[in-house]
Every structure is written in C-alpha cells, then in structure tokens.
Length: 218
Image (cartoon, rainbow, N blue to C red):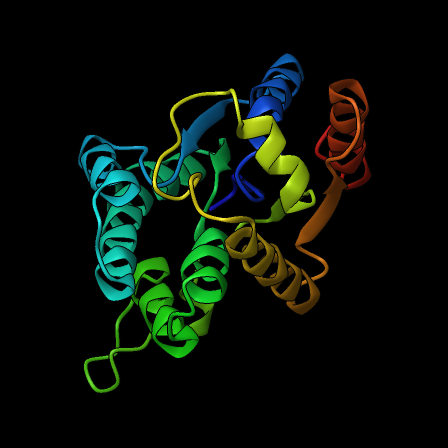
C-alpha cells in the first residue's frame, strides 16, 4: 500500500468534522486523489449498522461487535482498496474512537477490543490463536485528535441537531472518553497530532494544515 491514511478523532462537538473537508480540498489542490469517508459507515452495509449503533439501545459487547463488523466491511471494500490505488484516505473516526467511547466511556474490556482490532485490521489470521501477523495490521499514518473540554463541546452541540444516543450522554461520560483519547495519544505519540479545539475555526484549520505540512503531506 502506497497511499496515505489519516483519521480525525475527538469527542462529539470538538469540531473535527468541520475541518476534514477542508483538508481534503487542500490535498486535492496539491494533486492528491482523496477518499473522504467516516465511521461507523462508509459503505452501504456499514451505514445501515451505523443507524443501529447510534440509535438503538444495546449492551457494550453488542455495540462493539457491530462497530467492528461495520469497520471490517469498510476496511475491506473502501479503505484498503483506496490505499492500494495510492490515494489519501481521510476518515472521520476510526478504531481510536472505539477505545475511547466503548473502552473508556463504556468501561468495556480493552483486551477484547484489542482482539477485535487484530481480526478486523489484519489480513492474515492464525488458525491456532486467531491473531494476526504484526506486519499486516492497518493503522492510520496520522491521527488528528481535536481536544476540547466536554463542557465546551456540550455547549456547541446544544442547538446543533437532535442528539443521538452518544451525543446525549452526560458530561462525565465525555470526560472518560477524552481521557481515553489521551491514553491512546500517549501510547502512540508519533501517529497522534493533538489539535487545540478551543480556538476559532480559522485558527484550528491553520493548525491542521501546519501538521500536514510538518509531516510532508502538503
């Protein structure tokens, strides 16, 4: 795979979705072929699962299984093929969101999430251990983490739209989710780029572009 995989992460209301289209335009203007997608979603099947995940009540295991089922279809039919064609894939959320929301937010078993991640991100399964070869694991080359205090994010969402079941969670839930992102960023500092989201849209986008330039993508 010679393409470039960039994910956008952050709690609901942090503003990540506002800037993903702007980066897509900037990369396209530089001659890159860009695939813009999202999770849960990105395929016909995954979008159907997204509706269930965001709206229907379910326990954390069911939720996690559905998310990874949607992700598997997305990875196999959209992300890997686009990367193989040498495209830039910009994804609004990826597996870091599952660790943050289901892991930290819901308190779900992180070891089980790691197992599901190996199954879904990989290409060659071991018939003995149901694991995957390390060199077959798919991960973003760069992850933008839009970091914002949950109280500020809640104010932004207040009048935005009818909230889904995640957006309607209390502030304490999003504090745990934010902590989950922090843990992920500390564990993989080269991949993560923290964006201070408590700025004007222009300032945030300037930071997004600067990171891309620093990485040599623009």
